[in-house]
Image 1: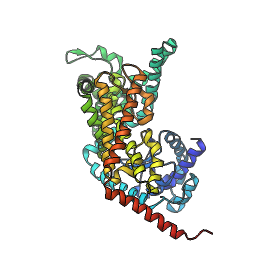
Image 2: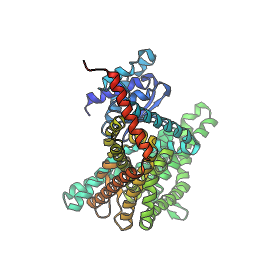
Image 3: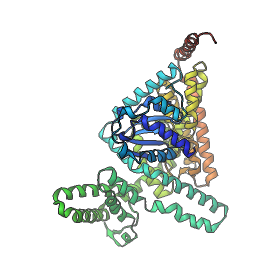
Image 4: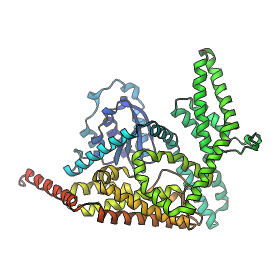
Length: 511
């Protein structure tokens, strides 16, 4: 998307989230614009979803607008430019904001939020289910998981970039081409991963209310080469031992040390003593405790993933692929982010992500079946047509909240498709053709450039592609035969036909 189009979308979004004065933070991940809003009641969710560029919205710890991988970075950059003079606009109120129709016109959108009552009813049902999920997710454990996710989400762009460079280097090495370039690509692809503990420490302190640079400083102890000279628990430490798990623990400790010191010290001593105590005690604790414990945990994670795929690939794939969509609904999928990162750091790729990505394949197959079964429901078919391309690229929210979850049974049959695709990938791993991803974030077709496997990129792509095809077919067949009862099928088609007839009468004779 061009800068002009990105700016038009940003200008359309800004008034619909309450204007500049309502925005406290702006960030993005692979597919979503993440906004910290002072007052969420000022966000016009219905109008936002009516924008052609918006694939959906998600309300979590931040207000998230799904834009897709092709647009999110550009729109975020343009929105930040619009917010630069925010201080001058801090006194604006609702009267100064453009209404939703003007905003949609600026982005080239339509004037109305929907195309027919059927789709609107399902969207409303999806929103209610989303709201109920938010209430269920407001538990201490799930809030903690979301905060951990907030630590790793900003790192995803670098993980993707480095992962693709690593894949390119591997392909060139296998072909025997450009050995000098392959050598140069090594540090380009691995430099970030060798220092990822520092970034994790920085983001951890920032997320939990400490001084970010102090969190990074304490976590940097873990990757410093000089730790090889330090002996703890009868063994010399290894640089990087404990990885992101150790960095997370060290930075959390640093945050608590910083708060404790600030409470005890007079303000005159704070600037000198607080950073010193935080780095000294946090660094020593990392060396003589956290690195060893976190190293054991990280090693166990790697061994468990390898064993699971080698000995229980079919069952593991079936369970993980089938349950991932419900895990997303419950907010529990965020616990997997540090596990993915640990596996990438240890083994160069995460074997779990390609299996979990099959959940999206099952949903795509399900959506196609719904499209064909509800052949008289023009509004829902229009929703599927607009959401399906995003679903193929791994952006599942529009299909989840706009189609499968509100319909009920199709959500279950989509999970069946995910289970079948996961089983395919799991069996391949059990037979020695494990496929992994060198980064986290992308899914669907967007994951192909990041694949890695013991037999090269082509073999890994064949396994992953076979899993996607299996998920599409299984999701389609399960939905076609079991996604609707005869009564519900007739009901949705009849409602759409009745709506079309009423609209036709209301329009009157042509003039």
